Image 1 (cartoon, rainbow, N blue to C red):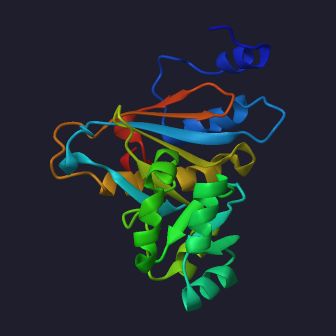
Image 2 (image 1 turned 90 degrees about the vertical axis):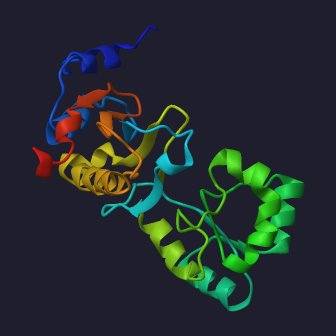
Length: 234
């Protein structure tokens, strides 16, 4: 693969074989970001579990203390007082049968997060094949199926992210923008990693965190020592 001049310059800052402490890794990611736009910083964590087994799933949601730096458009399936509460909390799209019709008939997908009141799941279930592959299907585990839709909207706006294993047993999550600086990025990173560690399945054996890499959108991946992923472990 051919890389651009800026990437090659950034790559010179990183020792590819070295396992960095988390704070040093994030400082490097910020320093190595050379794009003209404000790059997103992502964490990629490979876990010692097998996602094919139900008792080894790792999934949840967490509110990042400094947000994600991204403006989030929220769609809510609700009626009556719950719909009013969702609108008051800042949801851009609120509906029920009408919203289902827009998504099914018009292909409307102009939202980043989808929340549903529990009594709406009979309707929302019809959209599984549309929302599911896009990671937008409301779920109780992610806190997006809830009777308190207003709270869920507020959390989504504040920077709530969902983490879950992919088929290769890796969790991929954004933790903010390069402009946040290393300190705020670490606060978000630590909040996410703490949640992932606490979500360790009882069936998981051996080393839980196998590898951890942080990178910016256009930048170089920086490896973090899996035995020192948090300051408390350093």
